[in-house]
Each structure stands twice: as C-alpha cells, then as structure tokens.
Length: 420
Image (cartoon, rainbow, N blue to C red; front, side, top):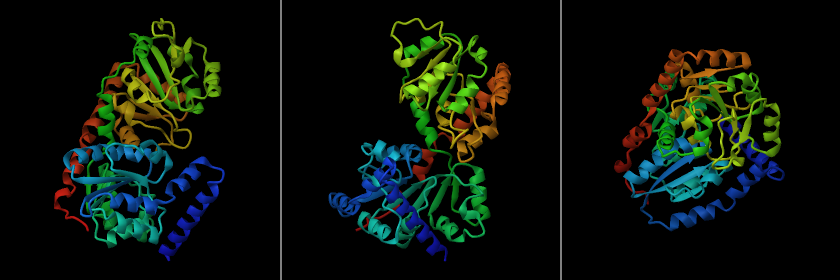
C-alpha cells in the first residue's frame, strides 16, 4: 500500500511540474532538461569503453553539490581511471554546473519511476553510487539495490520528524538499510539512525567545510572593501531580505562609531536597492558606483550590489548576520564561519545541521527581532564574549575539516570490479 501511495504521489507531483512548466520558467527548465535523456545517456555511455569504471554522484541542487564537490575533486585526483557522472534534480544546480570540469557527464536525474530507474541503471552501469544529504528517490534506489550496486550517502543529516522515523515510515526506513554505508554530519544523526536499527553509519562531518575553507584560503584582494573598513570593525549582513535589513537598520547609531556595516542584499534589483537607501540615515555608498581612488573613510554603510563576491568578502568581516531566517530558510552560514566570524540568523534554520551545531556550540545565535539583535550586539562589545564565540566557530571548523578526505579514503574504489 505504501509503495502504491508513493508511486501515485510522485506521479501527481511530476504531473504538477509539467502543468506548471507552461507558466513557470524553473518548471519549464525541469521538463525541458529531461527531454531526450535516454538518447543522451546511451550516446555518452557508448562513447566510453564498455568496461570503464563509473562513479555516479547525485545531488538535489547547488547546495548539495557544494557538499559533494570536494569529494569529486579528490576522486578525480586519486582515482583518474573512473568516469564521473554528476546528476541533479533541480535546474538551479544543473544550469550552474553543466560545464563542471571534474565530471565527464553532467545531467538531470530522470523522473523517479520504475521504468526510468531500471533503464538508467541498465544503461549507465555504475560501479559505485554516492547520494548527497537528502536524496532518497525510491525507484532509483531500489533499481540500484536490485542490481547489487554499492550505494553510499554522504553529508547525511537526519531529524526525528522525517518520514523514515514515523510509525508509518517503515517502507522508507528500509531504504536507509539498503545503503552500503551512510556518512553523517554529527553524532546526533548517528544516534537517531542507531535507534531505528540502521547501523552502517559513520560520523564523518560535512564535506562542504573543506570547500568553504579552500575558498577562504585563496588570495583575497578587494581594495575598495578594505578601504571602506579601514581600522574599524565590520559587520556583514549577508544575503539579506527586508525583514533582516529592517533589524540591522533599526538602530543606525551602531554604524556611526567603531563599527561599519556592509550589506549584501539577496535581491539587488534597483527597486530594492533604493528601498534600502531610503531607510539609511548615515552616509552610504554602493560598491558598483565606487571609483578606484575614492576616499571611503566617511561612509558608514557599503551596499554590495554585485554577485559572486560575498563568500570572499567575509574575509574583511568581524561579525555576520545571515539572511533568510525570517522567510523560507537561511542562506549559507559556512561561508562566514570559514573566515572565523560569529553568526546571527533568524528562526527558520532548523533544516540546516551546520547552523544547529554552530548554535549549540556557541558560534551562532538565533534572533527573533531587533531586541535580540541589540542584546547580542551589545554582548559582542565585550572582548571575552567575542573571543569565545570566535573560538567556537574555529572549533567547529576543526572538527569538520577533512570530511571529504575521510570519506573518499573509505569508499571501495579499488575493490570493485568492472561492470559489463
């Protein structure tokens, strides 16, 4: 009965995407990207030797790819004899990484159905499969299990409210038992799985930490940001939305002395930028409008109205607020953490294990309103409080650094024979 309900639900879901594709660009990309997938898969598989070893990694979207990416790059380096297939479920991941240089074939995952899954596995003939974090497509997993192909989960993150752990979730819990091994992010993940009889589990940390640390360790040189900061402390509002911006701008006296504010809004449309500027009572400037030799000492707020800089601009920061927590979900907390910044965010962060762990260890702090912000900001003026929070961030990074190396070192690349 559960299998029938899942099949019905997934069929209805796919039908809804097809209907939405008439009016929604993202749904249209989802549909169009999967057209002709059988022919494309056949053509690629025929272009390599029949006995070539194939690693298939599947990611839901861009965030999961960033967790799997350090592993793929290690695999390419350590096991160059493997052909690497990278699949995505979401257009936001596929469209940004379709030309990813460390994969031999980048594609969409076919819609989850018994026929699609069987065909995919029969043609691709992978030797080893890695799913990242949350991806549990029933028919694809069952096809892999039936074919005897070893499947691993990496960067796994589990919560007691998930379907697997409900009284009616046994059908899906069995999927977890089908994985050869699950590499999870922390001890609570392992403890939860053990409680439900899933024992092939290792706490390995989050491979994305390796990625953000690699970015943080690159040469970073943004002279205008450095000139804006000067010798003062810099608070960075990263990927902000209106609710968070309202909190950061509620008491602008904070940005008049000792601290400056760099605001990087998620929406950099002209209308939104003007809305921010209308709220500002202190001298401000836009990054895109600055001249190379401009004197920035008098400005108190810098609006970063560009794309692609934020992960490195945290290098200049001392404290960060990450946006999205008053809406659907927070944005990337690991990027500021990689630069050693304590972090504030809104209440909607429960799905992000790194945020929960940083919060529990004293490196990140939850705010509900401007009163909370004022309290924490005031506390951080005490050097001992600030240093303790920074140490908690460093401790988290140390504990999670090297996850990609650990996992890749344990995957059985050299123990798997060729599939013909």
